[in-house]
Length: 341
Ligand code: PMV
Image 1 (cartoon, rainbow, N blue to C red):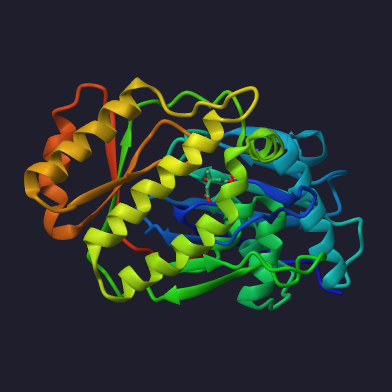
Image 2 (image 1 turned 180 degrees about the vertical axis):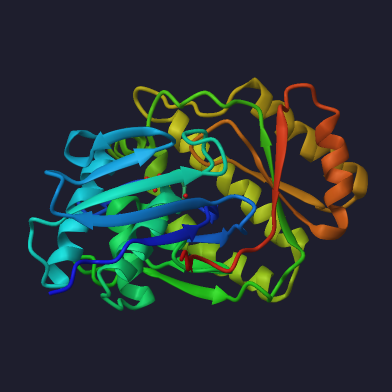
């Protein structure tokens, strides 16, 4: 068996339009409900290089300059270890091979801009190339899901649905592309960074606190499935008015269930709420929805809009002193392998 080659993959975050929150299986990240997202373009990305070597004694990752052994890391790093071992097994490689992972984000991590999604997707794509496994998108999505749920959507470009599945082993819980990246090219995501602090509660803990304590959470699975159907309908019709309303209501609902958890989880701060009001006022003044906010597990809003409205929305946002900077992304095409010679 040949020594695996050094390979580099680039993947991008995704913004959930209908959110994944709560896991029916913690070990392999099986969700209570399906979710729907837009993959972002290469203006925000994670670049990951994997080298397999028998010269090191454990899998390790260097992230933004800091090196840590995966088996000494948090839940997501431990899960990376399990996935790397599984990929080595699939390829028939000796377990003496250890992964040396080098990963770099082009955006701040831990602030609700899903670095674990782009990181998980980039890692499975780079390892797949390095070990020459030739896994399908479905299998890559399942591997990425086992690292971080939302990562399974970043394996694909365009508008992506992660099907919750019903099998216990998770073999039917993976992502599919619903609309290609070209279908509605005008869709734009403006990320207004109000805080770059690390969040107090990592999403891995938040999922389980909410699903096990929030009475409101019980409504989410059926509501989310229903909202996915409606959102797909709106996207198909390129109806931003209705999509925007669905997206804002969904974000509000997830954050209400977080707040309803015990102890309560509050990812939004005063700046987040100020921006929600600002977007509501802008839509009111326009007489239709031109911008829609949505928040993941952090205070930084993703403002969904159309390219024709982007500069107006950006101008409004820049007036707010709480916004440190604005990142802008269109619909992305999904991961790519870098040919480095
Ligand atoms: O993949 P995780 O465990 O980081 O969970 C992400 C959860 C949200 O970002 C809040 C929603 C989502 O669907 O991406």
